[in-house]
Length: 434
Image (cartoon, rainbow, N blue to C red; front, side, top):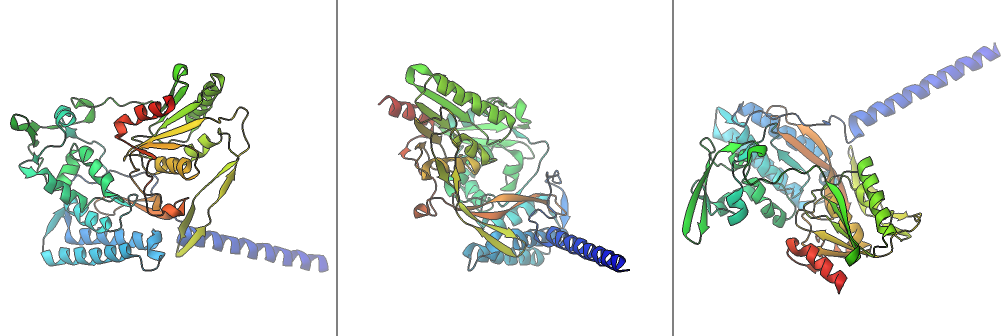
């Protein structure tokens, strides 16, 4: 009897433990896990001209603010002025929809409304986006490439269009937003977002030496655009110039995978074999991705370790603080001990900006070019959602990152040598030769 009693009690204890574990697991998944209810990939948004009722627009607006309130770290921070501005914009825009007494809206209308609300957060990773499976662009980039921005679009001053765009786009630095205008006005849906009528193509008016000149464009898939750059699958590569004792490592996207690791290993093998003393890391135009690309790179350097950044991470209604960290390195054989130069421009963003910060704030190299597009003290690591009715894509940050060197809190990554980004490589080579 005694043995059976012990077994029964043990069985009851195991059952209780299992139930407790299941309760904790389900509680975490339902209320705490940042990724609860998120989408791994976006679905296509409804066509821009698709009609939405007032009720549907209000539902999508409420869904957006609801996700911000329950996922974004800023809503758990004390006296955050941007949060107050978002909440005020939400109340105002929502009331405006109710007061307008409009029977139907379209997807573009809703995109603008939510864009104005989210703009107030000044978080470049929390965005509302039109997810188009078949994007269309003006059919000729030649004039844009040669003449720069047009003075007018469909007779509207381009500066007026840019001002409207700055009020609905999500960004941290206005310099980055303005730099994106070139790409913005090439795209049909983006032009429609700021109110440009594209039903009969679009007319760009340029100021030239011979006066104003008009060009009319229709919209086509990217591969049919005249003057468009060919898409290059080689997002990572390198060139070694023994005569100048220099190796250039070019990274156009921060993809951390086997191909990156093998390319990185081959690069440093060649650098060591040829006894190269100077490495130039070209991060111009790199929009980010996985920050582990930088950690992998640093493992090949002749250093004992490096400092990382602190962060605040939102789990449910809790904001968990992670202290700054230090990474110890077990040096590789023939670790690189030469000079490092990093080339940046305003499009150096997110994980590429992190790469630059690790080099700059740890005093491991020299930064050349233009300040980064977003800030080291910024929100990031996105959660993906699709709005219930319009299917617009919504991304929301759930982490708040803090710069390694807090004496430069709130500043972008400023280069040691500021120059036109197009001349950054030449500047680096000049510094090396000097």
